[in-house]
Amino acid sequence: MTPAEIAPKDRLIVPLDLSSPEAAEAMVAKLGDSVTFYKIGYQLAYAGGLPLIGKLADTGKKVFADLKMHDIGNTVMRGVESVAKLGATFLTVHAYPQTMKAAVEGRGGSGLKILAVTVLTSYDDDDLHAAGYRLGVSELVEARAQQAQVLGVDGLVSSPEEIGALRKIVGHQMSLVTPGIRPAGAPSGDQKRIMTPGRAIAAGADYLVVGRPILEAADPRAAADAIQAEIAQALG
Ligand SMILES: O=c1ccn([C@@H]2O[C@H](COP(=O)(O)O)[C@@H](O)[C@H]2O)c(=O)[nH]1
Image 1: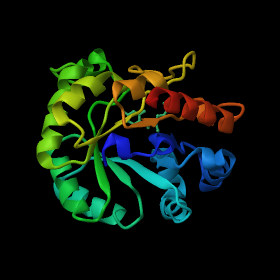
Image 2: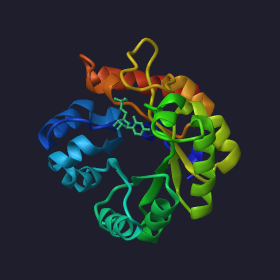
Image 3: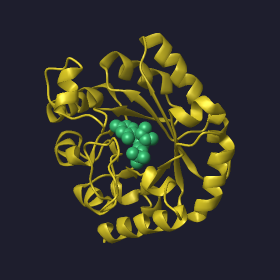
């Protein structure tokens, strides 16, 4: 799907980073038609939230399974085959060559799109060096993007700071999904590479993942509406 083909409303992905399926369903009800795309990650998946993928898909919502898989190739391939049956639109794996290759094999022609997480948005150069990496964030993101493209991965997760460089490498053949989004003045929390929704869209991001600024707002629906308005304005 080219950026022009993505419905503006679908560009906002809200992570259901909540403690139970009931809490997640209550948030979905609160957000109503303001949000069309949800993400299920560790907190909800490990609290029994995986069946929500199919449930939300059945109501017309899109779902991103942010399971960030990384294991030996055979295990990743079989795990992806299982997720492909759940009805998700996107599934994440870490951007290691063996892992990405196995994930692409596992998704086959299922329609599930594999996103490779390049470098987590909570990491900066010092964090990478502390973890034993020689490359800094921008070099590692770009190297992993090149590998992902060669391996047939469908999209990348990065911070919006890397979008310009990534577009030069992958063009519009891969979806670029960006967490680390903070409306002006919102606390960054543990995110280190951040940008506002408007600037991220202007930089060329396809999808924005915005969690705590919506989930922890006094009025989550109003917070989501404000971000949707900022996205629409940036798209012109
Ligand atoms: O590099 C990454 C990859 C995934 N995430 C996930 O996105 C959301 C961000 O939530 P906020 O509350 O808006 O910070 C969260 O579910 C992460 O697991 C990421 O932040 N960075």
